[in-house]
Image 1 (tube, rainbow, N blue to C red):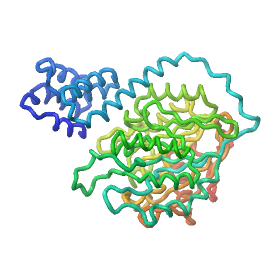
Image 2 (spheres, rainbow, N blue to C red):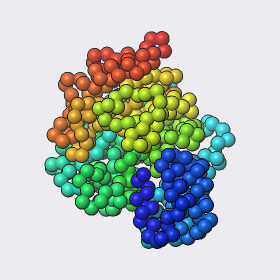
Image 3 (tube, rainbow, N blue to C red):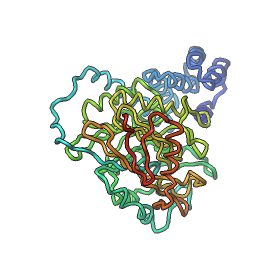
Length: 446
């Protein structure tokens, strides 16, 4: 488990290892949180200064989403080993989750807000969305595109910007500093991304209004780069959501729109914590006319085209039960679900007059992403929603990556054919009707 790497750093004394520690770590490997808590607490009873036991006990409480206990355990680690700066990133995540719970508890009995000016009669929102965007990385060297990235989005920028609102999943930080603890100094097969801040202007030129920073690369260069990314997005006028409790909010056409981005890790709004996720969505629905929910989840690669009727795992990580999450999100107040993470497109369905797009695939992922077969297939998804969030109609604008990950319009319409096929196979009763030209709409019976 990746968190054991820090345990190795912490265990610099002979008291670090004992039978309770070993049993607790073994319980963590099998996701038996109760046994892990029992053994690691016993370890600390025997030796209150055992930093490694405090550290792993925090992970045991992490599995239980007991954030108060996580913070208590890891604050003890910080006290015992202040030189280990890596701890601060994880402690920050736990503190934010604890703060979010307090905020949700304080607002759970709030009455629906009625002081907002209602949207104009007949108002609607035309949203264009794309999947993973990583315009190049300066780590390791050799993965930045030519011309300082200026040409990365030129072939698709007009289609992206042709919307009331444009959404992307920003895969990795926009940052010029920071340090990655993810990869060893000489690693050649480790994926840590850091895109220069100067590339941010290309997102503005492409009309980007909303960005998800809830994904497994958001913290590749630590807390400082994640904060730099959000500060830059603020400066560029791009609303964002990612860290626990964050909700983007914009007003367009007289419609107040909220966007919440989820990931299968508590470092972001946590997809796998159903209770908290539903409460956060309900809170957003209380304050907005339309709520967009994006998620980064699911297995990855060409074998991950279909949405299973169960929880997905990838390299041992829990990547979510996405069918259940999407429907729970709509039941809680979401109006459209935009998925990304598998790096390939997936099917779509309509539930309670709301659209669920399970994955938009790769869009602009320069240099470090595989592009074989359907990994190079992307799309710009247009959806029109009424002022209450109901899906009216949509359009698939197919794209294809070339030259190591530069997106272009795809005249062969691969995304249209693929999504139509996957939607009918995975959602035979709820898939929208998708035409040859990429236009799609609810079935007449819906």
